[in-house]
Length: 403
Image (cartoon, rainbow, N blue to C red; front, side, top):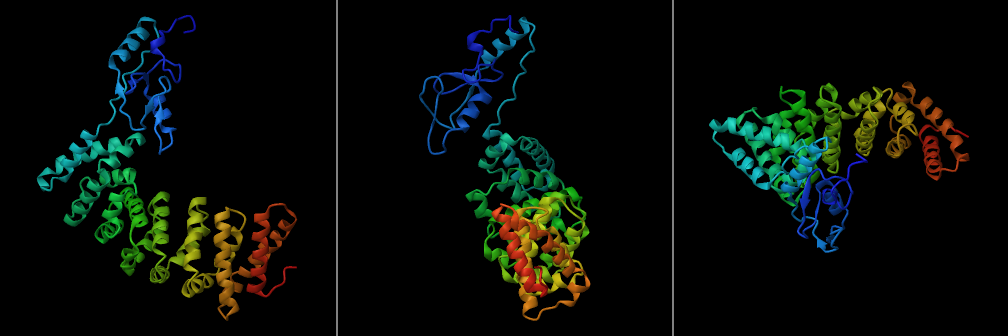
C-alpha cells in the first residue's frame, strides 16, 4: 500500500483516508460519510457547523448526497491495484420508507395481519441499528406502534406483539408528541399491566416492563394517582416470582419508584408486600444497579410508618441495610442512611425493637459502626460525613455507645 500512489480525490479531506462511502455536501465538497457526520455532530446545537474545506456554514441537518460515481471509481481502482474492495454501503434510511410501513401498520382490518407482521419485522430490523432511532422517532414510529399494541391487547391478538414492544422499547423518546399521547393514557398502562400478568413469554414481559417504565416517566401525577391496588400487586408479584430478566426486574423497580410520589401509592406498594420481597431480593446479592434501585425504593417506602414497620418485622432487614453501607456505592450509602434515620425515629418514638434485636440487627449496626470509626482518620470528606451521621443515628437507634 505504501508503494501505491492514491489519487488525491479518493481521500477524505477530514480523515485523509480512502473514502468508503463518499457523500457530497451542499458546499460541493465530498467527504467520507462517517467523517462528515462526526464533524457535524460536534457543532453546537444552536449554531451551524462550518465546511472544513470552504469554511462556509453547513447545517447540522444538511443533506449528504451519495457520490455513486466516485464510489465506483474507488472500488474499480482498489480491484485494479489488488486491494481489498470497498463494499457498497447500505442506502441510508429514508423517511418515506418509514411512512409506508406506518401506513401498513395502521390498517385495522384483521385480514391485514400478514401486512402488520411484515411491517413490524422490517421496523424491528431497522430499529436494531442505533443510527436509525432518531429518524424513526421523528417519523412517528413510536406513536404508531403504541397504538398498534393497544389495539392488539383490546382485541386479544398476540401476533406481532413481541416485535411491536421491542420496536417501541428501542425507538421511544420523551418527545412532546409522545408525552401528549401517554401522559394521561391509562388504557395503555393497563395494556402493559395485562401483558405482564399474562402467560406470554418472559421476553415479551421484559419488553413490556421497559416500555411501561418509559411511559410512567412522562405520565401525569393524575394518572399515577388512578392506579389500582391490583396494579401494584402485579408488579410486586413479578419481583417475587423472579421469572423475568434482570433488565425486566430493574424496569419494574423503576415503575414502582416512579409511582411513589403519590403517598397512597406508597401505602399500596407496602400493602402488596413489597418491603419483605425487596429485602429477600437484596439478600440474594443482585447486581449493583439492582441493589441501588432496591435501596431507592426501600427508602421511599420507609418514609411511611407501615413501610418502616415491615422492615423492622423482617429478622434480617436492618442487618442487611447496615451491611451494605460503604460496600456498594454512594447511592446505596445515601438511601441506607435515610432508611436508618427513618427507623431510628420510629424506635425513638416507641416503635418496635424486639424483632431487630432478635434478627441480629443491633449486632450488624454495631459492627458497621465500629468499622466506620476508622474513616474519621481518612481525608475523604464524603466518607467522614457518612460515618459521622451513621454513628449518630446508631446511638439514637440502639441506645448503645460506640465510643
